[in-house]
Image (cartoon, rainbow, N blue to C red; front, top):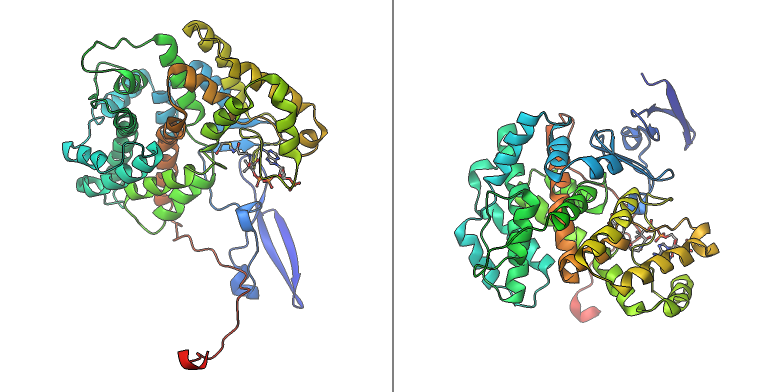
Length: 428
Ligand code: CMC
């Protein structure tokens, strides 16, 4: 019996519901019996007040700007850890020992190649296809290739599928890029780190030796870390919902990629850099701020605002802190960074943004770094998908392992016509 109860008076009945407490964060009212007891549903479009599941992976305090993975603050992980270690943490719940990390890295490294037949899928796409369109298709197609690990009731199968997905995403993303620029695919090199290998597969060519720049490798790894998981966001909820029917894991991740693509979610990093380039010079910033505030103008400041963070996004803090170093070490003086800094300052001092608690999110500065590294804007969301795959598979695994797991099936407030008789065509 929970200590706290929520009381509801409805249709002359007085009902009580348990209030459940997590290890931290808001309490939740357990309304699972509401419909059976009252015949009523709750109404929460956009799920602004709904906890859709129980999870021990990631915690966000949006008011304080806190993001924890298995309890560890994102800033500490970005500074001290590696993407492989964070992936292990998300999947297994604890930081690995040195041996565990070596084993995990070895396993992921040995799964990086794609089935050769899968390469032919790329050739079916137009050369100007968006990398996210290719990612949706190719990741979905994995479900037709790896039949030996898709018994989702078997934890070992789930583990192998998870490792395959994490390992193959860099290869798939790099090949999407190679296809778009008309260069040959570069096969993985098992001597390199996860991130170094991705950089080589993306920017290397068979005609020359590719030397991984350690500064770029570190920056890219940190970018992967800050994108690794983010609680029950739209794409993660999509993966969970797709997975709740028992669907093939590769198909579930393809569903997550489709959701991530939208400009309100992962597509915002591409949109943010395009916006900063369009603004171009600091003197044009006030015009764009006015447009963002104008209710009759659909324009929004991309990379600003968040459903959960009503404070500085801690991921943006990590990335903002990296920009100057990365640009400096690459010898790049991109005027877009100055535009970003001044736009941030102006927006944070504007009553509209203060009142609505709109702060830079993870996507505001990431594009500046990714562009300096050499990625075209169309690849930005594909990089997000690559990194978020570990979060998606960890959340999917958590859901499938939950003995109380049910197919996700929301209800609705019906506002269409009530029952009426069919009218034959000649009488309409
Ligand atoms: N520029 C101008 N106004 C904004 C912005 C913005 N970027 N974001 C929110 N608002 C206003 C919005 O017009 C609304 O005003 P009002 O209350 O007067 O109608 C108010 O702030 C609340 O916005 P909302 O759309 O109701 O809030 P939401 O929680 O549904 O949306 C959001 C969150 C992220 C979709 C939204 O802030 C947005 O569209 N931002 C730009 C896109 C973006 O950067 N997305 C990346 C999110 S972080 C990466 C990820 O995890 O996917």
